[in-house]
Image 1: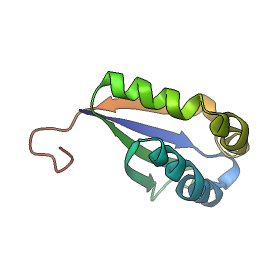
Image 2: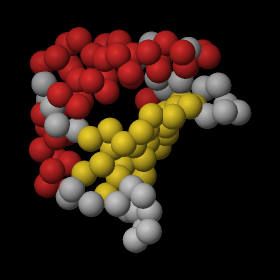
Image 3: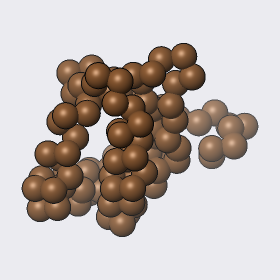
Image 4: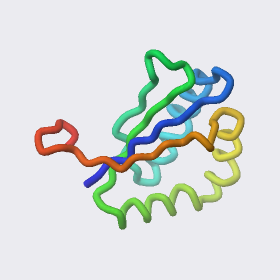
Length: 106
C-alpha cells in the first residue's frame, strides 16, 4: 500500500474556490470511481497552497483508477475545464509515500 501526497499551488488567492471545487465536485467524483481520498488540507501560512492524499493498494490499482477517473467523459468535459482557472498545473508536486509500521495510516 502507498499514498500519493499531492501539493498544489492555487492561482490568484482563489483557494476558497479551489477547496469548494475539491470538496463538492472532484473528491466525490473520484470516490465514486473507487479512489480512496485519505485527506484534504490547507496550509496555515500559505494562502495559495493546498495538499491532499490518496491511498492505493498497489500500482495496478492506481493505474486502473487513474484510467477510470482521468479518461472519463465527465472528467474531460465537465471537471477538468473548471480546474484551469484555479490551479497552476506547472507547480504540482506529487510524492509517493509509504506509511511507517506504527503509522495510524496503515
